[in-house]
Every structure is written in structure tokens, then in C-alpha cells.
Length: 220
Image (cartoon, rainbow, N blue to C red; front, side, top):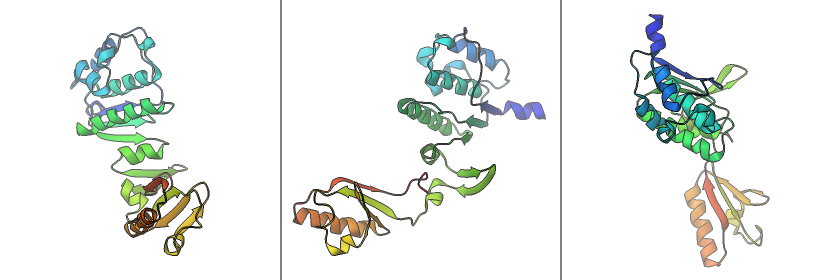
């Protein structure tokens, strides 16, 4: 039945409206009344990090806290399928990390989460599978690892006070670009790193700001 199907779905839209003069707990208790298989407001507040705000009125919550309440309202019916529409838009870095942890908590409960986001780092950190849409059509789909490529190149970046002129020829041949940093792109990072660090130690050269990374989903 349609009503039974709806009971298994939770939705958090980009913007929602709840009564500003209710407390967090009162809001959850109100929405819990719409569901047969409801979760306790205490459990939901713990999952979403709202336990310390249970008696706070909605109008007193910060933007990030209100977004958590939106998620809590969507969860109160204990849904099997949960839609999250751009849950961290407008968040500062700290609030985004808190939201990521909350979504990870939901995954641990065995929920299926359908997340839409414009942030590729968010998709890469949270998703088991990613579908990339352009003009309403899915153009690429797979796990973050599949989309970034199992055999993709590794980027090695560092500074040298003398620029690249003192690098040995075998390493210099691997240099992709020389701007603010020297960038090496290689499919054999272990070999290059061994040669590079061996050269830097033997010649007392400091590889400043050395980083080793795979291309991110955003770069791909």
C-alpha cells in the first residue's frame, strides 16, 4: 500500500519549516505522532547530536543545529530509505564535519541514504556509490575508487629553494610542472619517492611541503 511505503521513507529537503516556539524534543514528539514505527526522541537526538539542546526552542538554534533538527525529523519514523538534499550547503567547515559524522552514524544503523550534493569531497568521503549528473542525466556511476581510477597517477609535490635545477636527471624527467611547487605525476610512486628521498638525504636537501596524493573525485 502507498501509506505503508511512505512510512518507510524519510526526507530532508533543502529548506523545511517547523514551529519556531517548540523545543527540539517537542518538535520530534510532534512528528513522531505521524508514524507507526517511531523512534524515541532521545535516541534520535543522540544520533544527530542534539541531546544537549532538547529543551532549546527551535528559533534559538544556529543554522547548523536547525539542519540537524531537519535530519532528526526525517529520522523519527525509523525509515529504511532516507533522502538528504544538500544537507551541508552553507555550513562552515566545522559544521560540515559534524554533519559528515552524523551521516556516518546513520550508515552504521543500516539505513539506505540517498544524498544529493554539489561537494565532491563530501561524496568521496561519505558515499559507497556515486552517480554524477549533468543536465538531469547520469553520465557516470560507480564507487569513488572506480571513478577516480584504480591505476590513476599519483601526484608528488614539494618545494626546493633552488628550484628544479639540482634534481637528478631521472627525477627531473618525471616532473610535470614547475610553478609554486614542483609536481611529479607517476604511476610508480614508490620508486620515485625512494629515489627522491634518497637524493635529498645524501645531498642534505630539504623537500619542503612534501605531499603525496591521488587525484580527488573533484579533480576527476
